[in-house]
Length: 191
Image 1 (cartoon, rainbow, N blue to C red):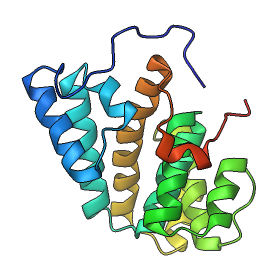
Image 2: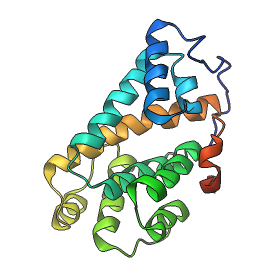
Image 3: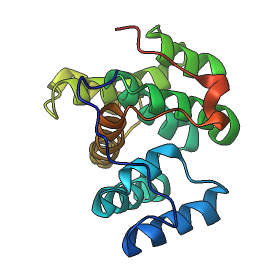
């Protein structure tokens, strides 16, 4: 999904970014080996990229979710928001880094049932929290907790929603082109 209006600010590089942004891009280059197109756009507002990176790192390090569960959360949010860039990128990460079962990744991408009951409960609750703007019902919350998750992890989903809202919305507005590394897992919003 792309915004009707496309932001025309140019993608930034280490050479063109303002000092704070330059540092963020240098760190991304050192950590990832490349600067994702999303970062090159988001760094037009260094505070936006810095907030995204800080929240993303906190979720990865401290959420209490396993790496595959983290991808379920990020994929579910990105699909609900219709972010073609982030669904594609997180599908690649799910395959290569987080080792989420491809059938789970594909179920989220396709909007079909997840056969793993625990991951299905996580995806469904994440979807509910996103679509109700943080107002899940008692029944939805009870199902999430009954699947073995904790109240703390409800807050971690809120963190993931904040992080993905930053990136998803920026990608909608910039019409961010997909990086070649993610191309094999390109996803298009069926909506």
